[in-house]
Image (cartoon, rainbow, N blue to C red; front, side):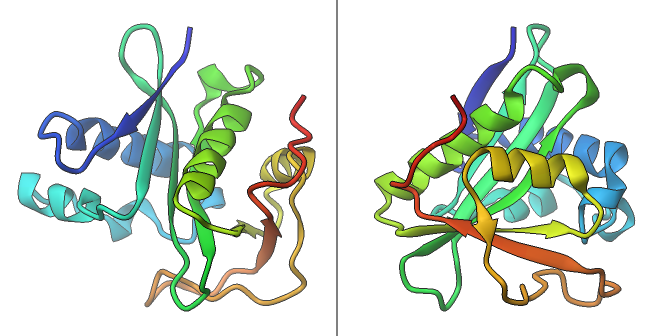
Length: 174
């Protein structure tokens, strides 16, 4: 069984789970993220808490029955884009793949976007990430036909495609 947990920056017990999920994602799927594991120095508790501290964001972790993080997703307001939100860092670990975990994480971020009054949910996919592209298409996302700016300064430029969908649109994840 895989549970989804919404993590709260104000909860002192949540940041370690988020840290563990983020590091697991970067180790398991470096090809899926613009940021590399080496870009995230381990740091201490204070550094990780600072990374986790955005109160206007949604932090989700999929957790296995034994408490290990097996998935991750985030939502945050899109800077300079009015009513848009961004889906960030969606990852599903090998043991949770094929169990609709990605669909559930995506739906939870979409629900957060709806609740917070966002009109569009945007995301970026690195070129060649076919499983992610299939997940997003299956859930009704369409190509936005526009470049997507990197949110990771000082990282090598890698091709990304942007996609978007209205949070109140058809789900398609049956």
